[in-house]
Length: 160
Image (cartoon, rainbow, N blue to C red; front, side):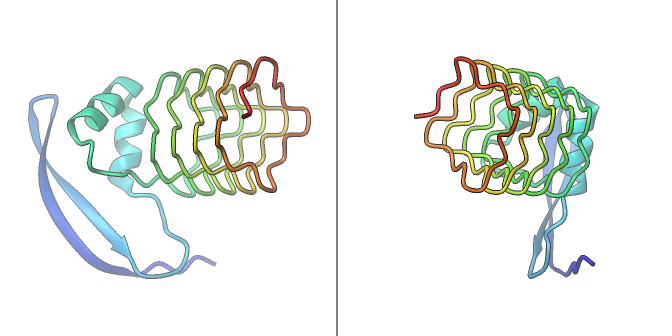
């Protein structure tokens, strides 16, 4: 059972593709934090829209925690610094995605394509990468504590 408590909400104006929008920032006090729906909606529009939004709003650290992104096509997505705790990325395409300093703790990346992905200083504590493709991925300074790498393809992967 998830406990969700909203303690503060504020709207900020943003401009995306030349259109003014209201952007809601939520802060949660306790329990399992849920994904920010606005962040999830932006990502589901397209990687191009997501990356443009990230460039226009570099000070916002998106929260996609506990989302279902299984089978998602996120090739070249800028997910750096994003809270991806507990996200289901089963069979997702994350080819050449930027996951630098992302929190992927407890994420399910089974069968995901992480080829060429930048995971420097990412948190993969307790993540499941069973059968994941990490060909030429960069995992320098990544926390791999309790990470399941069974059957993962680590060919030409940078680990130190």
